[in-house]
Image (tube, rainbow, N blue to C red; front, side, top):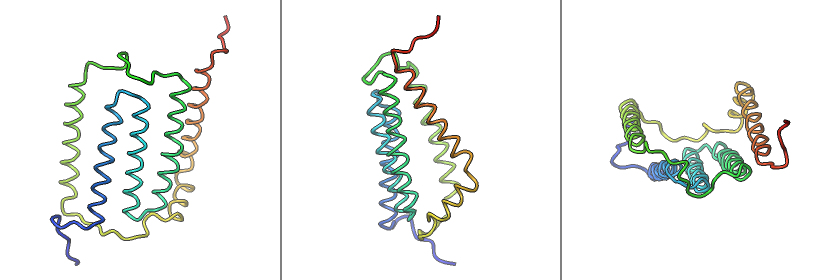
Length: 178
């Protein structure tokens, strides 16, 4: 049985992982707390980038590049196109503000505290050494195209329908039949 390293002397990889995790959590909080929609989308890019960095630290290079290409490159661009095509309010708007901020903050903090407590308690003594090989393209490709084909294709059709819906909503020359 190998000796489990101490939490008091983290390795360089663990420090980088924790810093990237902190950036991901901080930018995720900014995504949901900012009042400007475009800024929220840009904070989402930062969050996805930090997650891709976490995947790189965990030696899952393929997953990291898929994260960058698909989520940062496609999903955020689709979100921004949807914002632009539907002519959603881009700046600050009083209509989108909720008076339940304090209640929402209390519930969010309580939920986060419960989740952190459960995860820390459940994995207190667990240690997994970082070894390459868990994120190879062959394993992931066979898993996606064997087990996850239907959800993958359903998601692509859903995203296409959302884009077509945004285009239809943004057109002013189409009138309803009377």
